[in-house]
Image 1 (spheres, rainbow, N blue to C red):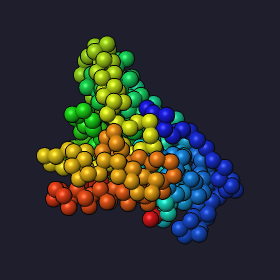
Image 2: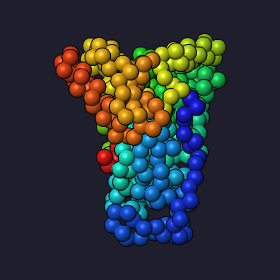
Image 3: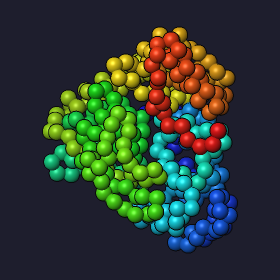
Length: 323
């Protein structure tokens, strides 16, 4: 996407002895015998999110595959909260870090396959660009808008991600989910009860795969539409900065950026955080912002919009962890 996408396959030296790890919540050892993924204690998350700010995860787990993830979560037995992390594009990780386990899906979860009847089967770690590009090459139209979503399948299935007049609810057939206790289930789109940027997926559930349905199309025309979306994003959004994507949801009958602009917040700063001059629904880290700066600036924008126009902006960016 932009130069600020994190390296999906970064590994860390966790310093843990093979076969066991200390549970940061209960101080009881976790049995890691037979677990093939990478478990990291006190893992820095700033480098994994687009804002390039924030604290550490108590634990970062990068599973080898679905069965590895299921086994690991089953062994947790609900003792710690679980949070999935994709490209980190739509997230503020607070400076106090994230409690429990952060699950990051790597290469084993980034496959994209073309099925019958214009259906694409995609791993939870596959990016929107990868999915839309494969759909284009297969002559499947209707998924072009995924080119404009800076995230992974798991993230935009959970949040009903959307762009350019379309959203995931329009194309999702079903998704495969691993629940916090390790249970594997497949949920049809109706079970997700989608609304604007929201789904009914359980807290801590990890989307490991999804199937999207398009319609027959001409690759050249699909590619032209994807190029149009990419050009529009480049021209209107601060993609080459440390940002987190759209900050606030569009309220009914309004555009969030227009409300922010009308409240006089264009270019407003707090510490190292700034409201983008290019697109006022984007916050940026100008270099040394803390997550507290970024979130605090967002709250100040919300206050000014409400005070000046009587509209309560809702956060679209996820804010996770300890203040």
